Image (cartoon, rainbow, N blue to C red; front, side, top):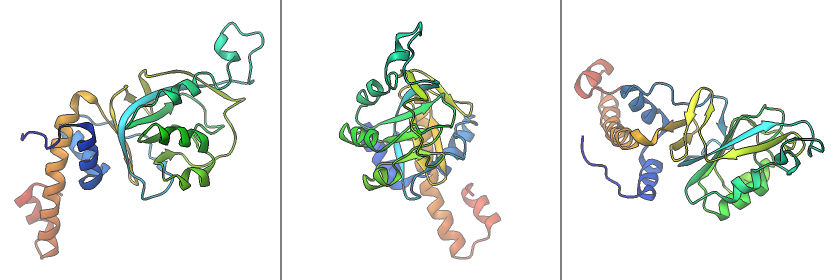
Length: 232
């Protein structure tokens, strides 16, 4: 396999935005035995033209049933939003705030969180649940993926327990530093240990598909195209 045509995360992410899409990356992971890397299909971009790629900054949320825990044995229960503000402020450039662990009875992302994340240079947000302040998020052009929009606040209903730790969404393991790639067809997780192999293969496949597309457009049969190029 040829050497990767990138040296930095920024170069890789620019290549992916320009040449790749989740379907081709997912196909290449299938070939490598990484068969369960797509998040549930209900997690959609807030707008269909949004593309997201960056390093995972996983966040663990949990349901609560009052905003402050007056008789709690856990000091975190008396802290508004738990560690959510700390997690948000810890975002680094090109990272994705990716949150799981809560029920879907309140929103996990919103306009002010978007404003802070954009200021820090974050790549986007993916939540296993809903977001709110839809117009405010859209106005900032920030890639945000969720089950949809729902205005109910997390303040009295959820707290962040921890961040920068492994989480799961739909049975997909997500570790800090894994690559999160999302577009209109879904969100997938590329494990950090396999990222070079995956993206080199995906770039080769995407470029090969352009040849197949031209051959079919010029009249070649699907069967002959697959026989010739090994791509379909």
